Image 1 (cartoon, rainbow, N blue to C red):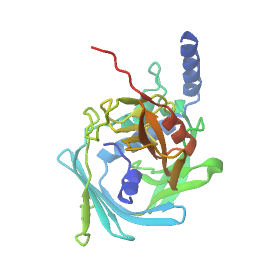
Image 2: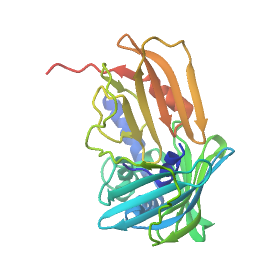
Image 3: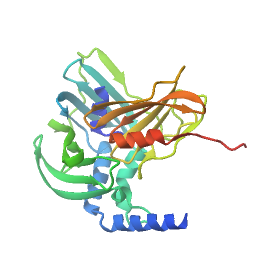
Length: 322
């Protein structure tokens, strides 16, 4: 399962003309792509299999601040990670024996910058603009700053500050409208090559699952096959799902969102629900699918209008007879 350190920390807290137009857009995006920035993103994606460390990170979401101890070890072709919440109710997430050669869709999207000259391949540059500049010292390490601005309204901007030597993500800020910081993750303390030291005083321990992107998930099944008919450009599914699976997950390499469907015994009153924490949201609404009431929930790191449009695009999947 491809997810960044920031996402792990969050997890612990809880027609012909058409083709011509697309080709033109791709050429425009690729022509002004910052190859240096894309190379830094590729290095960042690969750092998970090259760097062992332990340290303390902070996660700021509005007025909420969480402190998490993180550690990663590398041995025998696998990595192991521990994330321990140090504030509030202590809890720990452990991901053990993750193969270093396991590449997931999000990581693949981040490393497309190495192949910009291939036909029809612009990577993230088709959907984001980049700028690289020297950064400040973070956790005692000199950083390189990569500003990432969306080319459309369907995703957030990101400010990455990477270790200038290892490309490990030292600080990341998710930016909303007007460059408002919605969420910020950063290392306060960082040591490379340190042995993994799990804490023994944590009562709640959650082993992290490692679903394989080539195999169907074990999510609950619905009685009606369905599909999401629209997602923002650049987003791709993270794993295979059966047509009746209750969950779909998508990523563009930087942001992730999931769509859940739940069958209901009776129809809900008209309306929608919304909850936000930092850059993450949970958007819910009732709808009818094949004449049956269902609850749609979109959870992820996208603006509310994106979540609403994704929910509106859900359709019954009419499968052709064999």
